[in-house]
Image 1 (spheres, one colour):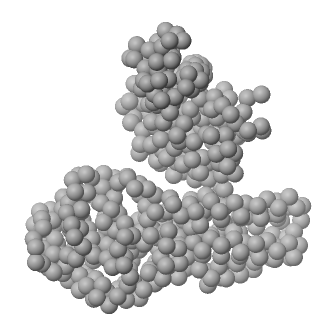
Image 2 (spheres, one colour):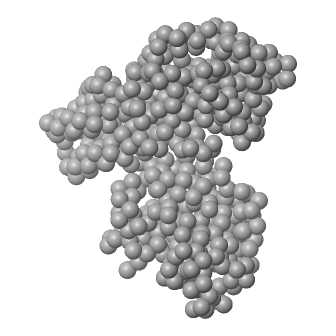
Image 3 (cartoon, rainbow, N blue to C red):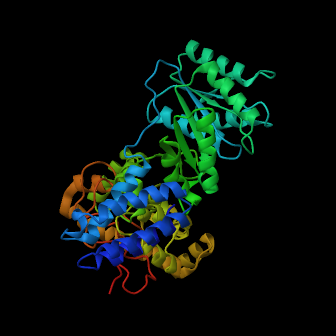
Length: 495
């Protein structure tokens, strides 16, 4: 998300940073480019006009023109105004009401409303320890209620039994009654959608709203529809009243105009983002973090939070103990590759690291992508248990067999083995430097980790990158040794 906008803004700010001093004409020219970049990103015109005017007003003032680093000051002002435009403070789903708390999900058909209902229910159950009941109020779309029931089984959340012939308002009332009698904390009501906004849809949603008086009315909008999503949000807010927005399919939206426009046009906060098709692919919306990602500042906080959610602390401790004994097997390497994929793959990790966004094109040119991780996992999976524990027995004939079994070339097998050697060597050095606590921190078991031999500092239990390197979250830059084929001058490339 925001790839095109980040690239355009990055080029503008790079030129500003190179200047020792800025004139009013320099700021005006830069703001003109920022305006074009935002419009091309499909941000609503009124939002763009207000944003550019506010930035220009601050940027031509004393705080920039007389600053020691005027270019950096302009970037800071743009960052602050982006945060303000996105909503300043993150706002989670409000559950501060007597149980069961009714949450009404509204939106157009095809926007991902039913799937989002299941994602939110799973998140409330696992993270907030809430007992959740889901109910489908869609009596028009074939198998809509059955779809929610199946999703409920997948995420471990109860759904209201189906009774044919009921109106949506009657189903909503029955769901609330069941919620009170059976001790549920939250009841999520999934309403029907239409292909476009019509009076029938609005009347149905208003009837349900009046029947249950929901504490939250969340609009589910498809980010890929751009300005149409903003129009949908405006119509629903004016005619029904919404308390928050959930944007879906933001992973496929390279422009990001809907996210930047929603708050300014409707006045309602974006509360969550759907970032993929899996039931875990939903995130809280943090304006400051998103502004940082747009401007290439990264989002390390979200990366560390995601690591904490996905890394198994008990398994991490076992891995650390093996490291203390000087043992790093190919099974351990495979586990690390899986952790990287759980964190969103190389692209997902790099997108959250400060100043790394510009390197993603270089990585694409060097064939450094998530398919590589899967190939490496396939190579390791094609080995026998004994081969994974003792790679020294892998002679030429065994390597040919592994390549054939994994659908790769012998060179790929050799590359994985070389990467394993690099990682094992690094783990051994880290073990000597920091001891058991440092290794536990490396694998997500808590504690910090010292700067690795080839990279920058590291915080909070992120797995090493494939090939023995890892993201340099300190001052050492990005290190990806062992990946092979990196372009000249790529950070971390060996001489």
